[in-house]
Length: 66
Image (cartoon, rainbow, N blue to C red; front, side, top):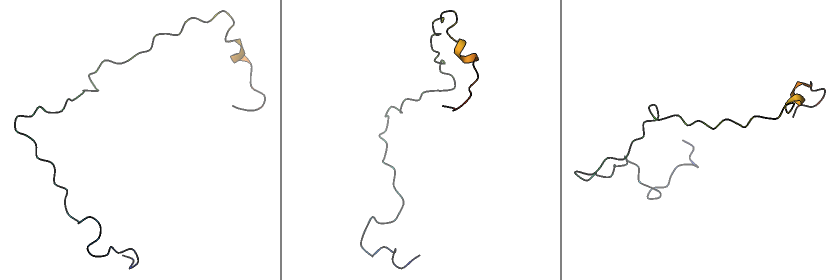
């Protein structure tokens, strides 16, 4: 350890293990959400585009990519 970065005695938080808070007897456990068995969210399909609305996608790009 570099001598300039050593903690001075009596300063800062004392080193040691953090003790967990005691739980009350008979307390209700926290809610758990099962992600693997939950229903999957799906979006509603997009409305149908008018005829020819996606024609611009067939033109090749000749310059900059955005």
